[in-house]
Length: 376
Image (cartoon, rainbow, N blue to C red; front, side, top):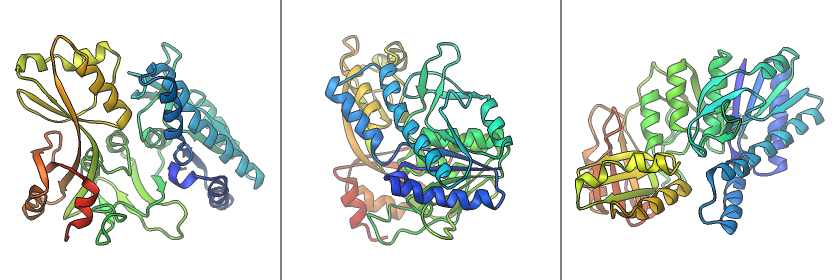
């Protein structure tokens, strides 16, 4: 049993989908039992978000989930059509049809159980199963929910864990995990392997190769991960498992860091309860002091949070959004020389308190220009 997850960037056009269908067909004809999870095509999720913004600057999150879940359904249908065109028996399922049960807020729900009865039946019939990632259904409300940006990764890992797949392959437009963005700095190098904790910290701090919840779930379920290129031939990629430990450091861009300040520490204490009352998902907390919070999430969620906290009359909080660069130390000690280089370009910095390994965040004017200028 093999679980393959294809990212949106490698599904940008129908030609891309047909090319990937050819690769899937080859593996199916070699006797592999395949479950394929797909993201929305290219930038279609962003396109759908732009459509929603033309109607409302802050649409109801329930309606936003209904809209955004359409992107993956388009991908799954087209992939299944492409496979059937190649005489490969295939069937597509939405998250709810696949038995992906969720709980929590719209736009950032969590999978709590998987009951893939129809998926199992299709696999038993030697069909390639194509699933829409990023989505599920709340069994109590019967509402469609989405899992947050990158949630298709979580779908793939949950299915790999349920079906005891040896490896969950995350196939993208890059050939592995790099220590910094190779598009921004030509000296970037690709890791052959990483531990779950190393990659999780990197992804919490801006690395976009995988959803942090997917890594945590893979560690919990004992699912080995492989991140590799979807279109390249013989891509070795990066393996992620428990029995490995890479050395060095990794730099990543955090494009959305929300700084929240208050003159009165007591006014900061109920911010999570307030967001929950407003039914807004809680962003990741990077760091906090008595008077200051640093939060991060995808751009649309940060916008919701910033607006809500600004409008919270009872507390009079001040918010500001920054760009940032994070440094994750993969070795035992933090990289002080890199910290010194970034200190000269940053407005302020702080340690990431959520990591089990050393990591630091630097707020900067332009993260991309700083990384491009670094002499690694």
